Amino acid sequence: MRDVPKHPEATLSPSEGVTLALRSAINGGGTRACYRWLTRDSLALFPHVPERPRLARLLRTHPVWTARLLATPTVLGVAATSGIALLHPRRAGRSPQQRGKQGQSHHRWMVGGKRGVGWNPGGLICVWDWATANVHDPHFQPLMAQVDHLMIVLPDPGCHATTGDPAPLTVGQRGPWNPWMRVATVWSMHTTVLPSKQVRQRVWAYCRARVGWTMAAFHLFARWGLEIADENMVRLSIAEFSL
Image 1 (tube, rainbow, N blue to C red):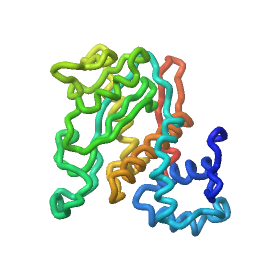
Image 2: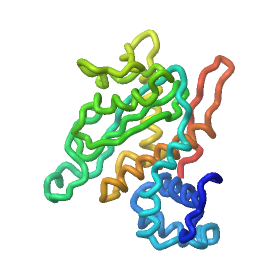
Image 3: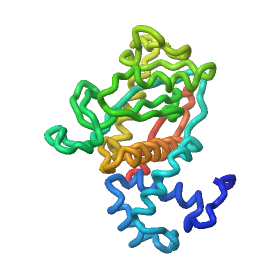
């Protein structure tokens, strides 16, 4: 973040803002618990931290910085979708300002949002997007268009549309090269290490920012824990970063 100038009225530098955003995504839950931890245990590291609402607005304002922490597209990639619960199904429709929508993810009904993610073969995130849970998987095809002429994407068969598939999209067949075990491993890490199956933010822009910082945190952890065996087998593990 050295090339990003600090605003003259800001109390935190851009690097401090990114650090706090990543820590908030790793901690999970809402902003209140994270702010209590910050002011109780780490105030010496961040003596100029603003009030909690202002800090939350800071994390929402700069989600574009997460693109700096993602991987570079490779020749071959994988794409899949996964749902994030924002509301219990029994409470759906009670508020006119309801954040999420009702939809299916992994053959289960839920009320919330859906994220589409593109990885390289090592499991590192290259691109991602976020939408309500009622959209179908081909809604995330513009993700594949972002990496046109850069990589060949093997998506889940549900991402295939009747017409209009982008050029890099090649529906993966389960058999000769099966990427779905790696996809299941990555989603498992997002559930057990990074608590990203549920988001407690109450505004859609804050939810999207939280998902973006979670994607960036996972990519950093995956790079630090990445190992390549003698047989050129990639070992992906972020268990040592679990809080």
